Length: 331
Image 1 (tube, rainbow, N blue to C red):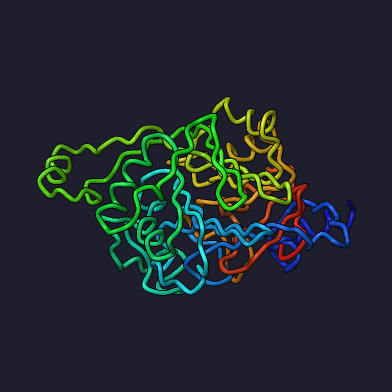
Image 2: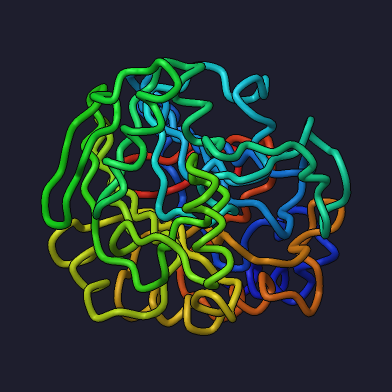
């Protein structure tokens, strides 16, 4: 413990502390066998940047799940995607479903990625599902919206799958349940194919509604349970993620203003969800410089407040987690 405290004090001077300010639990020697791989697909290689949302989870059986492609996946031809079996979308906002995207990795800066390619009215999520022949799993009233998009583009509307709150579906061996998130979930007018209706909504300053936003709980075949918060504030329902689902790894938004801030997110992790490890997301600012946590950032605030190991999602760098939520490699 004394050694770790020294490292924490020099967190920005030692590479070993660039991705965590909490002492990681030692992983067993064979931890790499049967691990879940988590690869962030951000805007700038090796960094945690303002618009970064997308994560790919790979089950030990090879099933690959893309969570919230957002704006930093360079469309369906992004070479980092590889095989995608399932796409999850927490809500319809452009930085999650994908209204625009970068033309290629490293376009623009960490603070302002060059999101110059339009994905409307389809969304990047739909374009990726079509190109990869994947399924898209969502909750609330979102499945009908995505089914209509698939149908309009020659895809199979049955590939849009509903997982209603409290229920779950299993795709490729990965069980996907939906849980409550407290946020907005309007459909921007730009997503609507009918230009007259889209103009009416835009002129009125309103959006179409597809029900509440969604969080997810994934159970992988190695037994690891992962909580994906989506964009959310603090809710009492978060205790269910611990008491019923027993999540061991969590992804939590820390951006503040639109979602929980770093202090609130740390409270959620420390007191409500209590996972073995956590990955911060949705910082809405530059989180790292040269792969090291930026001093004075929300990321730094979160890392100092959270009580369990916190692993920074550096774009393109794969982390591996065992069933207990311990990082076995890459953190």
